Structure formats: C-alpha cells, structure tokens
Length: 255
Ligand code: 3PY
Ligand code: MG
Image (cartoon, rainbow, N blue to C red; front, side, top):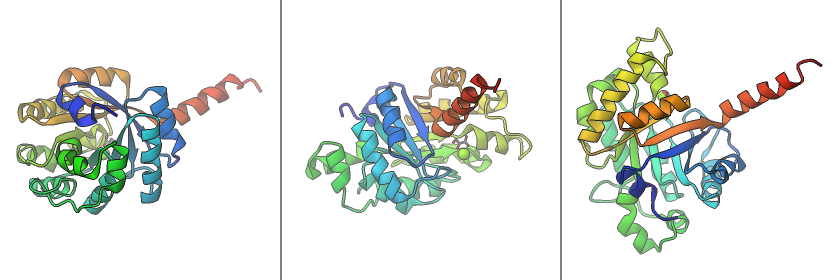
C-alpha cells in the first residue's frame, strides 16, 4: 500500500471514505473492492466491538483500502489499541477543548509527540514495514483527527488547531447543526451548517492541518471539496441497505 493515506492527504489529494456501522468484515472489504479508497469503521455509533474492528481492519487491507476508525467519545485507550491493530487514522468524536484534543492525539503518537505505548506488531505487518521502519514513520503516517461538532469546539477551534500532535479536524454536520440550533433542528445539509463548516475548513487549512468532513450526499461532497476538505465520507452501509431494501420492495409492490 503506497503511498500512505497521510501522504495523499498532505499532498492535497481528496480521499473518499465509505462509512461502516454494521459489524461484518465482508462489508468493508466489499467497499474496498468496489473502489473506495478508504473505509471508516464507526465504533461510536456502529455495532463494532474491539475484536470485530481488528478483524475488519485486516479485511479492509485485503481489499486494498485505507483503514480509518472512529472511536467512542473519550476512549483514548481504544485509540492506542486500534493503531496497534493497523488503523491508519483515528477520528475522535465530540472533542471540545485543547486539553481533550491533546490527550487524544498524544495517545496515537510516539514520543516526542505523544505517549503511545510500544507494540505495533499488527500495524507493522499491515503497513508492510519492519517494526524499525514502522517506528521511524509512525508519527507521520498515523493520523489523529478531532471531530468539531459542538459549540465548545467551535469556540476552542484555534486552540485545538494549535495542538502539535493533532493532524486534522473532522466536521460532524449532524451534531454541528444540533449545536448551532441549540437542539431545535437536525439540519446537516442546511446553509448555516455549510457556512460554519466552510469557516472550520478555512481556519484548518490556514493552520496547516488536514480538514475532513462527513457528507450525506454527492452535492455536499463537491461543496466540501471546494471548501478545502480532503478526507470526505460518502456512503454508509446502514443507509445503503435501507435504500436498497426499500427499492427492492418497491419493484414488487404490486404483489
Ligand atoms: C455528525 O454528523 O455529527 C457525525 O458525527 C457524522 O457521523
Ligand atoms: Mg457526530
């Protein structure tokens, strides 16, 4: 697998990731073989436990795609375990302060950037490197993205972007829209959400960090790309199945 996800994103290349909540290794492998350049396993809102995520990371590698995981809120210990198991990028939800961003990012970086603990046996195997090579490259090749999706995070954005060990931020438009409307409206595709997302992308790029975002349709992907986002999600297994199941039933609705 060459180049690495980190190299592509730092070169300004867009990477589209599928999003998986169903805990079944064949589903992300299928996404990879369908041509998705990356697959994100969603432990925050999906069905994955640690063992299933480990198996699925290997299945994604088998399909030739980059391996990304979203951890549950505040679970930095799990972030460290997942990078050991071969995740190339960890997305941490609901990061609200510089302190939270730093604690998260440091859990996936070796000294001097952090305090990740040593044992990357699986990560080195999946990345095709010896453990010495892995150590030399891990801090630049393993990415930490903090999700920006709350009022506190927007207020603290400059401080979060100043965290050295953090590689980028990732916008969650659903939670962001709930925050912006003080809980009144779920509006991930709305204008206010897009305006604030654009500001986040601009500040992020200015700070020399990577910008990522969750998108719910192809128009949003295009908009996000022009706003400066480069790690862009498009396509969720649960939503794919929901749409396909409804379409399938409609074909025989006459029965
Ligand atoms: C959000 O939109 O809030 C997300 O976290 C995307 O999954
Ligand atoms: Mg969210």
